[in-house]
Structures are given as C-alpha cells and as structure tokens.
Image (cartoon, rainbow, N blue to C red; front, side, top):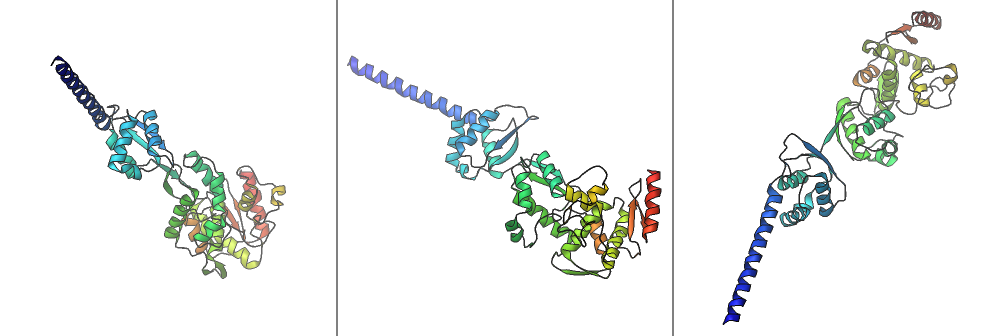
Length: 341
C-alpha cells in the first residue's frame, strides 16, 4: 500500500513537472512570437536576408541582428504557418519593437529597402555603374558594364545594337540592393520607351537628312554633352545636321572624351588624333553608339533642329556658345573667347 502511494506521488510529480515545463515552454514561445525583442519604436535595424537562405539561416541572421530572441520559435512558427516557403530574400529595415510574427509577415510581403538612385542627364554607362555602386545597389561595376554590352540581353529587348548606351533613361529610380544588372537595365529601358517614344529602327527625315531612330539617339547624346544651355541645343543640332549634309566630320570634342574616357581637363591636339571609331575628328559620320543617356531636351533638339547656316560653335565662359557660318568667323570667335577666359 505504501509503495502504491509512493508511485502515485511520483507519477503526480512527473505530470506536474511536465505540465509546468510545457507551460513554461508555451509561455516562452508565446513571448518569442508576440513580444518584441525591444520596445524602441524609433530605432530601425538593417538586416540583409541573402538569396538562397533557408529558414534556419534566416532565423540566425535575425537573431544576430538582435530582432528575435529564439531561432527555434521562429522556425516552428515558419513551418507550422507555412510562411517559410514565401519568405523573400533582400534588404530590410525593421523597427526594434516589431514582434516575430510581424517580422515574418514583413519578410513574406517583401517590404524591402529601396535605394533612391538619381541618374543625371548626360550620364554614360560608366557614370551609371559608379552611381549604382555608390548607392549600394550593386557591389562592383563589372557585372553591370558587362550586361550593358551583352548581346543576348540586347536581343531579348529587340535591340540589334552593340550596347544599351543611350537607352538607360536619366531619371530618379528606386532600386533594391542586389538587384540584377539585367533587371536594372530592363527597368531603365522600359522608361526610355515610355518617355521618348523613339523607335530606334524607324527611318526619320530631319532637316533634309535621313536617319534611323538609333542614329537620332546617337546625335542627341552628342548634343547633350556639347550643349550646357537649353536654348543652344537646337542650334548645336543644326550645326551637326549642316555638317552631315555637307559631308564634313562632326568634330565633336565630346566624342573624343568618350573615346578616351577623359572626364576632365582640356582636349589637346594630341587627343584629337586618338585612334577610335568614336573620335569624330578622325572619322566621318556618327560614332558607333551613343556616348551618354541624353535628356528629353537634347532628344527633341535632335528631332527638331533649328534652321540655320551655322557650321561651327565654340563654348563661352558662361557655358553658352558662339555660332559661326564659316571657318574664319569661327577662329575669331575662338580667339575672342580665349581672351575672355
């Protein structure tokens, strides 16, 4: 009889211990799920969920960042809710007072941090790559620059050209960290098509010259680099069209800068002899590709040049230009501007 009592009490104690342990476990899980790690609403923690991370690695990343207490509870909730299948990799900024259930929901919805990237008019692909690296969208410029000249990606967009140069529309974008170069380029090209309406394969008759849309874009890119004052753009365009009609070389210093990747400093006589198909002092006609992404004002100038007899222009100190009909007048204008400078 005494032994039976002892067995009963032992069993009761074991059940009590199990109930207490289970209760403590349930309380711990409840606290992990619904009580945030911190109650600081004004502080956000940056966390990056890498592509290919499973639920275990995701939980570990969040715990290391100080956003969750218990990786086990995170995994249990993820599995039982089925939400582990739809967690999206990417960069997040999560307030410290967010509980685990809310964090999972944010990861499922993909509430990513978006980086505002401003691409100025006149940016070339190298400028854009540098901007994306500085904006922490991509780590290095190599993959982006390779994608810009990837014939397969160009073909997928219906472009039978050597590069996306000129098609990367200058605008303010909101990109994601780790976004692929293909998606970045695709987004910029979609905006180009929507904003410009230019058909690169269509034949355009402009100021007595027949140009494909792609050639108009090339010319617009040169106008963008040469003209700093908006009112000068149609006049600069008229000079180039007049030179094309006369069979003269465009002789644009901007094309030499692009050929040499020379961003600053004066263009010397030696530079003008630089061997490159982009050097319009050495080669007739247009360069093989645009030399930057032109803005709408330069593109409109290329489509609607002023009607003039100008054949030359030279920059003045204030960034505007003096336009001339003949070489002697051009030399006088150059000398005058040199004195003023």
